[in-house]
Structures are given as structure tokens and as C-alpha cells.
Image (cartoon, rainbow, N blue to C red):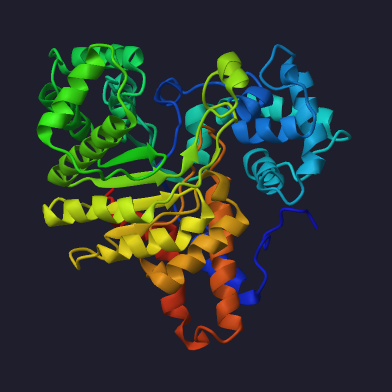
Amino acid sequence: MAFIHKDFMLGTKTAQTLYHEHAEKLPIIDYHCHLIPKMIADDYKFADITELWLGGDHYKWRAMRGNGVPEEFITGGRSSWEKFEKWAETVPYTMRNPLYHWTHLELSRVFGIDKILSPATAREIFEECNAKLATPAYSGQQLIRKFNVETVCTTDDPADDLRYHKQIMEKPFGTKVIPAWRPDKAMAIENPADYKAYIEKLGEAAGMEIKTYADLLAALQKRHDFFASMGCKLSDHGLEAFYAADYTEAEISRIFEKVLAGQAPSADELDKFRSAFLFDMAVMDADAGWAQQFHVGAIRNNNGKMMRQLGPDTGYDAIHDLPTAAAGHKFLNRLAEAGKLTKTILYCLNPKDNEVMTTMAYTFNDGSYPGMMQFGSGWWFLDQEDGMRKQMNALSVLGLLSRFVGMLTDSRSFISYPRHEYFRRILCDVIGRDVEDGKLPASEMERIGQMVEDISYYNAKNYFNF
């Protein structure tokens, strides 16, 4: 039997039934990812499996570094084969790391290869993958279509002209590709020189000069409206923590003008500005009827030497341990008091916050929409079996798993879609085990099957109105 077989991860007969009869064939809604719109629009052709598999994948890069692979074989100038060979040497050491499962799921589902990747099979797999990637069936758009992906939401800056989204709209390929609003750079006042350069870029995109905080909000509103005209229905923020300091409008105006003048903000000013900015962005989202997402808890660019050498998003981020409860509740309460709390998904990177985030979300459900406030899926370091099970369990006991909007890839890779399969298999295994243990009634299999379908697909489709 192949390692990745039809009942992989499905530990009971009930789990197998739930997966094969209810989850397996449903379309995918990938409502948060980091695919590059230009690559989708251009129907990008990958040079080889190394580019497709190792290019930009900091999960694999971290594992290779941990296995003693020199940087020249990871992000350096070594040949594609040499880099792939080093990855193949690393794979046997990734057992019990999610990369071991993902690697073999992707080989099986993308390339139809059921061999175990190792130094002994590396050359054969390298050549077979490259031969397939040379065919039209393995272009960027075809890879997305291969996995029955109905909707993709990319992650886009307010200053982006969305030209590639326009190109996709003008020449559709069967998957809806929608921008998602990520205004993090407009909040990043820590480095005044970088911030001023960004504000100038944002002003050009909005067709106006930005001199005051009121100007900033006006420019962002113009861009927000433009994103909405392009089909955008959700925003996203990447945060170390929630921000909910007390502030006045006059203080925020002074802080903004100070930073534009080249002066670095104090810690107190930084907290106040972030608090105001997040509130104002959430109001825009509520007024537009969008959903909003908050990814909380990453500490980034921790290795200074490698940051200088390689830049951000290269595998040197980690889980933060800042408190989230007090500021998170205060922030959401401000919005609720103002009547400006829209559909919201909260994600944590530190598993200590699973129960915190679930109870935070459910404190602000108001009965206006089922599952309005969501505790999001296991994210980044937590989008693996243990993280997914813990997220499902926290949501189950403190909220409503049945209303969960399910999985997303949060990936830069065109072949990460087996992660949705992985999630669905784990979901079915969790629920199937409960049925067989007598914790859920076997007489209610029709309802249980519908629950699996909803979490896998229908909840997200309805929640975002795709």
C-alpha cells in the first residue's frame, strides 16, 4: 500500500465515510493566501520542481537549515538539482514534521508520484516532475484548476493598482481571483524614512497628496472603494498583538505629522497610532460590509544577520508570547459600542491563545449572523495536525465548530492545495472518532455529514458571500 493511500489519516470507518462521501469532492475556497497575482495572470510556467517547490518556501528552508544544509544550497547560487538533492536528503529527517506529510501529499496529488522522497529516489522524482512541469497541464492556472479551487483571495497592499486582477477578470480561467486588503504598511510608522516613501506611493495611487492623518484616511478610503469595485470583500492585518490604547484625534494627527517630518515615534505614540489606525480601518470594513481578519502573534525578522543578507519572509520569524486578551477585548468592544463591528476572524500563532481567542470571538457575537465572530484555523506554525486538532477542540468546547469557516492555505505556493485535503481528513478523523466513541450519535449521520460539508466549503462560501 502506498504511504498516501485513500484512507490516509482516517482512523475509523466513520471517518472514512465522512471524508469520501462528504468532504473529498467539494470545491476549495482559499480565502487567504499569498499567491502572486502576476504569476496567476501570466499563467506562469515553472522552470523546474526546485523553483516550484523550494522557491520562497521558508518552511522547507528552516528544515534544511536545521538539517545542516549550507545556505548556498537553499537560497544561494547552487544549481536546481543540487538544491533539490539537499531537500531530498532532508526529507527523511522531517518525519513527524508536517513537511513530511505535505511533501508526499503534493507528490501524489500534483504529480501522481507515490514513491517516498529520499536520496535514493531523488533523481528519478526530480526528472519525472520536471518532465510534467514542461507540459501545459502544469502551468500556474492549470495547477489551481487541478484542485477544483473555486475562489482565491490574494493579499494586496492599498497602493497596488490591481492590474493583474483586472487581467484575470478580462481573461478568466475558471477560478475567481479576488484581492484582499492588507493595509499593514500604512500603519508601519516605526521607520519614518520608509513610511514617508510608502505614504508618497499611496498618495500617488489615490491621486492626492497626503500631509495629515485625515488625508491618510481619505486616501485609504479611495483605495478601499477601488478594491471593493474589484470584488474585494475582506481585509487582513498581520499584528504582533492587538492595540487599544486611549488616544485623541489631535494626538494621532500630531504623531502622523511628526513621523512624516522624519522623527521616530515613542513607544507610547506607536501604541496610540496603531490603536487609532486599526479602529479606523475596521470602521471602513464595517461600512463596506466586508469581513476582517486579524493574524496575531508573530515576532518577525529575528536573525539580524540573515535579515540583512536575505530580507524578510525567509524563515527567521517565530511565535511571539505577548498577551492578547485585554487589548483584544477592548479593541473589539470599541467597535461594538460604535456599531461598527463587522464579521471578524481571529487567528493566533501562539497555541496558548487558542481558548483566549475563542472566548474573545464569542463574547462579541450579536445574533446578526451565524458565526459572525470566528476563531480562525490553525495558522502558520499551527497549520499542522496537532495545531488543527487543538484549534478544533478549543472551538468545539467554547464555541460552535459547526459554524467554522474552515481552512485556508496562507501560502505562496501553487501546490499547497493538498493542505485543504489534509485539513478535511483531520476534521473527519476528529468527528468520526467521536461517533465511534459514542460521543456523537450514529443515528445523526445525515446532520454530521452536513456539518463536515459546511466546515469544508459551504460556511466559507456563505460567510464571504462568494
